[in-house]
Length: 134
Image (cartoon, rainbow, N blue to C red):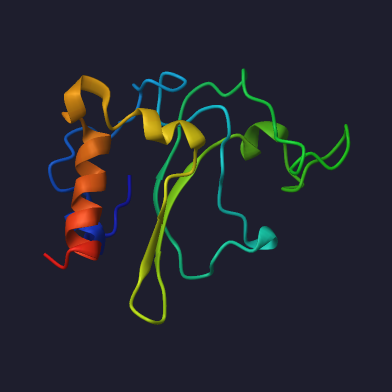
């Protein structure tokens, strides 16, 4: 999780350092399609890394757009290093902001346990603070 005190508001009420290991889509907030920050591919310079998926990614495969050949991928490093999801946040010049979950299966985690979970809380914090101005 993010160690920047400026983002304590986002993690208020989030009780676990490891969260999102549950969900109705792929059994977790990170799965199937994993998106990560990579400056070479146009990731915003002003992004803040909020969280990164952890665990065994051996069952995942790189999506075709990341796999350059059978020998190399876009990161230029080992394939395993590219197999993670990055949850990021950045602000836009006109006052807006972007929250990117980093995985398509993230959407299956908020409703887990009747929306009483850390992923749902994190989204509620974002919506309340950034979109409702509270």
